[in-house]
Image 1: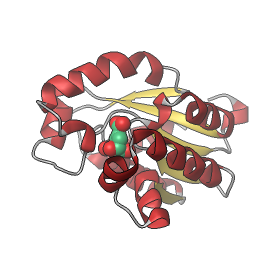
Image 2 (image 1 turned 90 degrees about the horizontal axis):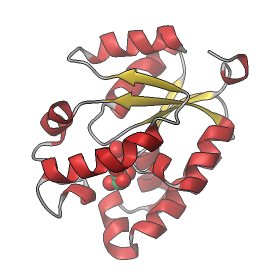
Image 3 (image 1 turned 45 degrees about the vertical axis):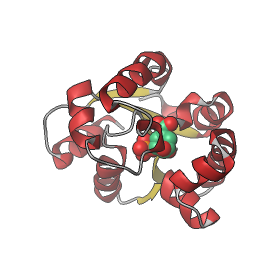
Length: 171
Ligand code: S3P
């Protein structure tokens, strides 16, 4: 790991269902750091759920709030930060993450993602059609950009603990 990245907050990126929140919590516990979920933080700060922000104000407004929240968090003490799947796709937010964080892409195959997000209604992007088709489209668009993260870790069929341990050994 490049030396200049070693003290930075760890920023987990990747598509919804990849395990950013679950693994992030374990990783933070392992490293003795605070865990923060960006979507959760946005909900607390705004008083709206992510779905409500999408519905009432639209995705561009959500991306603005998301960027400001992530920037503020990365200017504070070292944490493990799970970001929403679209955060790293926004060029300005990606710049913030690349300048201030150590980014890890949790790469996960479609069947695993589908199993994790099946039946969930709190993900506005999956509500407009068949989740498999939507996820496949998102993966095609997003993977080349997630690949710009500092580190890539593959999500396998393993426990959250096992994956967090692997990650802790990498950072
Ligand atoms: C989004 C992913 C969601 C949430 C919002 C948009 C995306 O976060 O930020 O629904 O664009 O992929 P998760 O990746 O935590 O589901």
